[in-house]
Image (cartoon, rainbow, N blue to C red; front, side, top):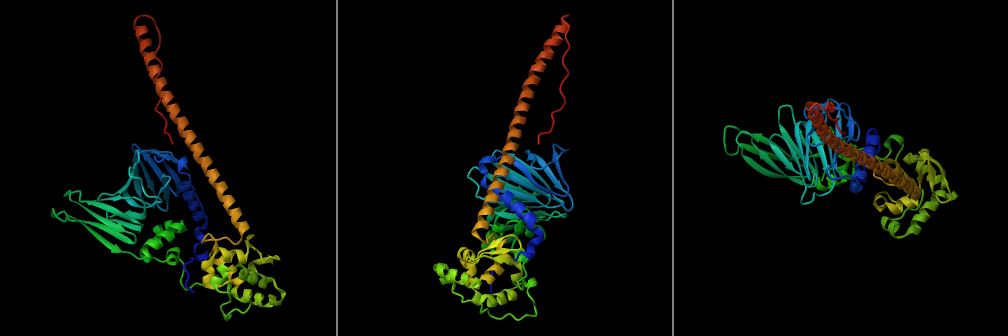
Length: 444
């Protein structure tokens, strides 16, 4: 059976990070009214990340607000994730350095060392701009994802994973400029020739395969399955290969006795995919066959062959199974909600369960209506909590801004008072000028 689905075991090591990043990205996308377009914040950091402002290192913390001109450096085995606004996410790789500049709705990142991955989830407005700069390239991004790198030798490259961008290249020695459009699945590299004034900068554009993507890019893609689907639709790459799924794997292969012959099921009468989609009665009949005493022996044999019976704790009178994971699996519901799966494997209850256990979680499929309702309620709660976090951060920003403005007014009054006091002292009226305040503290 050909299938574009990815197995859960291949990405189990990334599961926790994936959930966190997907949740944060989705929530940032959905709550644009709470995050100003000009707000840049540090969403994620691993390892050692350093922040510099005006050549001075500043204290760094989670959800830190970045100011124009800030520079982030990452050390070995480190990374930093930054929300440039509610639709633009950038992840800086290890051993990298990038400066962030913002002027109204114009954003610039100057990558001087290392690499970064960028994702823009919606097209920019006509008055917006987002450029990533290196010493020779300016990448004008309108709504796409990709990877920019500058290696230790100064060689620069750009990979586009979905959409397309226009790249402007400049030879800093001769001043010659050229432009090129780079599409999804392509890589562009720049070459400089300082011994001539014409063609002193040249582009090399080549087509990439998913096998040529480095681990940093693959990890960023694997953290967002929706992005993987978008990338594969744009490039023709394989979802399985990006997700790290071996094409020789089969569902729950590790739970199946390799010495056991895989014979066709005769446990219950199957129906076609069209019948399953258009006639709920056929689904109900199939579900009923699972619990019918006359077919109990046959379905048990089928379950043993597919290796899923061990995950079933109990089955109620409606055919809904309670699993060892605490989840519920309703074969009729799963078939109704996933006609694409039915078209591939049919409507046998245990085959559907097998698919759910192998792929359901990674493909955001639910085993039952009740589990879907519970998951959506949890996501809504996470969204409300994220809104609260953003609201508190914005309230702090506003309070700190008011405090700075108030401090500025107080300083003006204090200076005037000091001048008057000195004048009085010179006139014999006495009085002592108040001491000047210390340097303002850094505003995170």
